[in-house]
Amino acid sequence: MFDSKKIRNDFPVTNLKFPVIGSEKERNLIYMDHGASTHAPLPVIEKYQKFLNGYYANVHRGHHHLSIVSTELFDHVSEIILDFIKGDPAENCIMYTQNTTMALDMAGHMVEQLSGITLTTLMEHHSNDLPHRARGKVVHVDVLDEDGTLDYADLERKLKQYHVKLVAVTGCSNVTGYFPDIHKIARMAHEYGAYILVDAAQLLAHASIDVKPNDHPEHIDFLAAAGHKAYAPMGSGFLFGPRKLFDAAPPYMPGGGTVKYVTADDVFFDKSPDRHQGGTPNIAGAIAVGAAINYLSDIGMDNVREHERELTDFTIQKLLKIPGLTLYGPKSADKKSGVLTFTIDGVYHELAATILNYEYAIATRNGCFCAHPLLHRLLNVSPEESAILRDKLVKGENAAIPGAIRATIGLYNTKEEIEILIEALSVIAAKKWKGNYEEKHDADLCRTSYYEFKI
Image 1 (cartoon, one colour):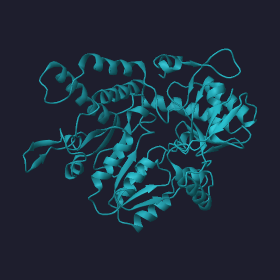
Image 2 (cartoon, rainbow, N blue to C red):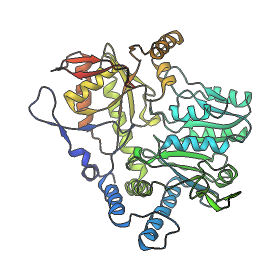
Image 3 (tube, rainbow, N blue to C red):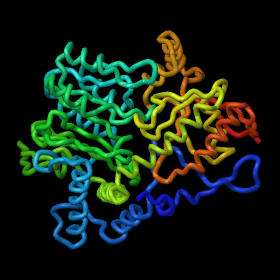
Image 4 (cartoon, rainbow, N blue to C red):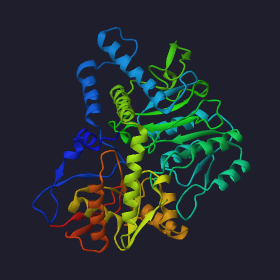
């Protein structure tokens, strides 16, 4: 059973209150920025703190009590992750990373020595595109104009056209919430002799994952994710993949912990996972990831998915009724997660997100969500417009970058919170907000324009 009240009580963030414009009372924070980072529940925080307070020590090769306990806790996390994604520990292992970006980069490193190009898609987060560009030729699979979903026919064409070593694809779009059929893609990739890498940053905490046995035609070869999008603290991610490829690749970060033996003239590197994990890992972070996965397992991923599907369907139906609001991506909750990206006619995305914060205490995200090619396609930004914008940015000139607003649903969101979001967006769409906002520009900021409440 999905006990919404109990789950909300597990998250301290649900008790936060902030002042809002036009009211003497503070409002409860409505956190809908789970697509960027999730908050940790009390069981995960307590596990994290217990390690820091009671077992803090470096792992492996320590024969004192703290190191022994720390090592046991740390090594057990790999078992938790493999069990959660149904991975075979005999043929695969888990590499710990700082985040999903590093995990995706590590996957690119593992296949760099292989011949062929990498296929990625136009719906990817930059982290599942740019690391591959840095290592060789990348070709992009197209998306469909109507909703930004994957063009499977184009994938088939490009698998036939090129000698492909790796197909890199998201398991869930961070822009539209769309779930591509990763097992269908895996089958297609394997038919042409390619491996598949799934960016599961937006998938891990929202739906069940089954990587399938290594000899299965729909097996997922590599899977990357991070704790901070799955109810664990920031700073720890992982890469799942095949031991044979990990052991064949040169060490990703050679250094302490990656070797069996070193002389002044030679080095004998260890097997995976140690082979690629130079230096001290984020032990506390990895233990917290294990605790977060156990927390999700206790709730049940089918229950998590159904809760978010119901809320997503409820939200979609409400959003589609707001005049002037355009919702991007699939309109069926069966095809997507709780990622809801939209624009409002005549209201710049920075301003809309600012109003949601100052007047309703609603936390959202805005911009291009590190997926510029997909946003530009969805927003119909022409190549000419894109070139003009790029020239302005290169020159350091002020430029209004096209973007959208994104609200993302998590474990503890409720229909009551969604109703407040819909009320707020209806007011914004009608241009009836209360505050007075001033546009700012700062060339030193990553954003070229933003809004502040003007007293």
